[in-house]
Image (cartoon, rainbow, N blue to C red):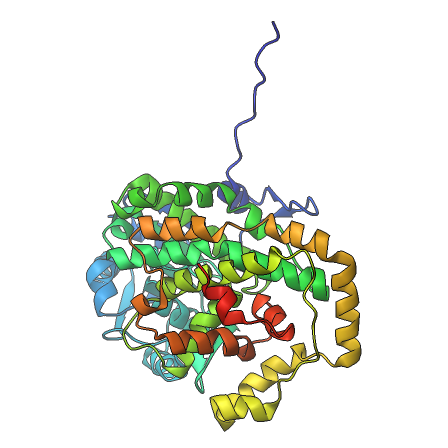
Length: 443
């Protein structure tokens, strides 16, 4: 009787990335995470000085947080680091916004001699500190307070300027530290936000792959391949995550870190921010929500809508038939206002196709649609599976649970594509004159 087949243990993509040994699935080239230190441990108490000192950044540190993140971890970090470094403690108050005004105030508050900026927080704090550190030409590191978003390890930072939310190039933090006991103690809504921000891998990959297959835009498999194992665990056990299970918290932290690295390796947010993020950005940009909701909560709901839209369109054996774009500056200005409409037009005009270009795209769709739909469908998770995962975690699954009216969400489905030069299934549906609202909201 032959001996049972032995399977090699599955490699850890995060460990391989940190060592510079992760192999790009398309090219075979080794990839390295652009960070000097990333630590995910059950408890990092009393290790703060050790972790920061190992980076050899200098002696003058600015520890930046807000009222909530200082209470969760910042006070502990600032006190510990004060035993070894000269520490400037900067609180941005209660629920600061990642906007140009707040960024300018932070830059003005930083001491003239600041060797490094230490962010203690999650999305808003991390983005502001990235950009402030870049403006000061000094490094930045972060102690995470919640597993609520995937930007900890990315090279990008989101900032709102003149009413438009932009993804700006910054620098990857030199150190990223996840204390799982702190993450597990975060408010449940922040855990659900992190789950929502992770589940969009499915719809973001489908959108990016569409742009690649239809428009020949660059595309990479690596940022998605490295997420597969941890994503599967999160989808299988969302209840354990919400119960504070440390092993599941580790999977979520790894997913967020790997997603951030994926964005950095691609030089932009393409693998983690597509149509679903446009929907959330649109509502935020126009101030249409009636109550506060976290970014990841919004992305969870928007991901369900994009999954339904993608699923509906991919189910059709016949390709969509595109028409020349009807977008114009005048139309965008009428909807967004003159100033914001101008910014949106600068983004959207690149994907407004004239009649000759539309004819070329229709020829491509006619020739390649069976292969395209099969390849895109293969990277997605069914909408019902995503819905089940979010429900099991107690997360929002409908626009109403976010404080978004039906009219607001319908407007987002129609107009969100106009705020950024990313070609997604929102564009494909609109260019084919399909009822995007019906397709994205059908059960």
